[in-house]
Amino acid sequence: MRIFQRLIPTVCLLLLAFTSQGQAKAVIIDQVAAVIGNEMIMQSDIEKQLIEMKAENVPMKPNIRCEALREMLEQKLMVNQAKLDSVQVSEASVALNLEGRLDHFVNYFGSQKEMETYFGKSILQLKEDFHDLIKEQMLMQDVRKTITEDIHITPSEVKEYYNSLPKDSIPTVDAKMEVMQILKYPKYKEESILKTKERLLDMRKRILEGSSFSTLAVLYSQDGSAKLGGEIGFKSKSELFPEYAAVAFTLKEGQVSKIVESEAGYHIIQMIERRGDRVNTRHILLNPELAQSSLDAAKKSLDSLVTLIKKDSMTFQLAAYVNSQDKDTYMNGGLRINPKSGNSYFQMNDFTPEEYYVIKDLKKNDITDPFSTKDDYGKVVYKVLKIKSKSNPHPANLKEDYQFLQELALAEKQKKAVEAWIADKQKSTTFHIDSSFDRCSLAEKGWVNH
Image (cartoon, rainbow, N blue to C red; front, side, top):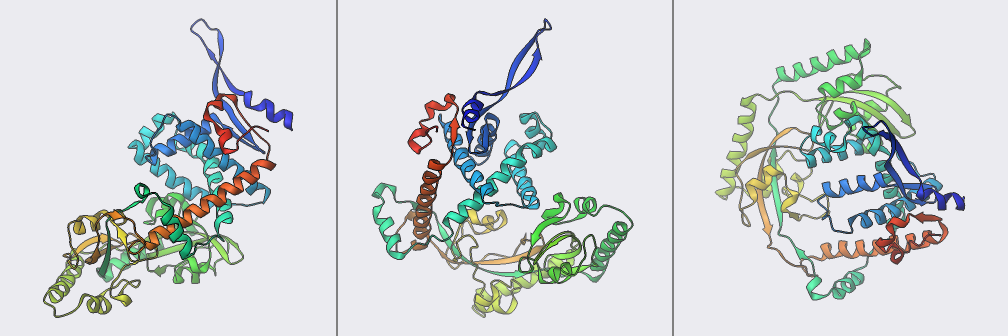
């Protein structure tokens, strides 16, 4: 095995090309950059990594290929361990991640056509190319999670971390604000609801008569899973809408449900597979069309509330408790919680474009006029926002920014744990890096061929 690993980095994939005189010549189309355990890194893998870095706006420094290779060596080390430990990720999860990644690439290049032109491949070929890379990244994330999941940080460690920072290295905290909101959903007309149900019943009839559920989902479903044929991957009951779960878990493989109404809208569901307390289903989601009169009524209702609040006839908190249709905030007076941090503070880039536009110039205690946006499920909703607090950018300090510093200190502690794990695995894993990367000084990070 050792002989094979020392030889394989010199192996190239060759393609016979022909000169204008008809003579054949060898053209290198790919080359092995490194072998680690039973895993291999190709030059093309590094190029794919660079594309991802560019799409994430990572600065393309002169040594960026060295950095990309180092990251991939660490990734392959974790993938090698994941396979030894029989860690698995579902194909549905890989497919969903792949779709999201390609959408990101399309945004980066400007269009699908531009992306295909850049790579010289069709979207289907690119999906095939990136499938294994993304699967490995997901395996790596699972291994990293295993390494760090039991690591915690104490208040004294946060203070010690903060005090260890040089004065010129203390991070600047962006402007933050706390926001309260009142939500109002326009009411659907009964005739619009009936039309939606009729459409779903017609689709269900077509499926039972032999039409492809996946194809109809791609064509008509209003859910983000439409591009995957409506498939949402394996989920437990707690991960699904209660109404959806109640029906999904009663279906047999291939069976199609009747219409199910949930918070997201109206569904028909097909069972793909059940594994214990988790099911993999696909669905078609539709929402009724909204009449202009319904939109106007929702906006008018919020206009009246804003008038009462500004006249001090009602507090914002009471108005939210009595009138808001947001089940996550009405109980605490409309105060929003940031899902990223778990606290009530938001940075400006946390808001949707519609929200940013109406609050960017507001001050503490200012209230917006009602405006329309869409919720997490794509449903139209009207909102009124109030700025509870707002801070200016400033150097982080323990009093105002403890949670921010706590997250940085925890990330640093986790990083050190991962580095220690990598250093330990490097000792027991055979690897070889091609000599063309000698300039990268990878030995400083423990990557010495053995």
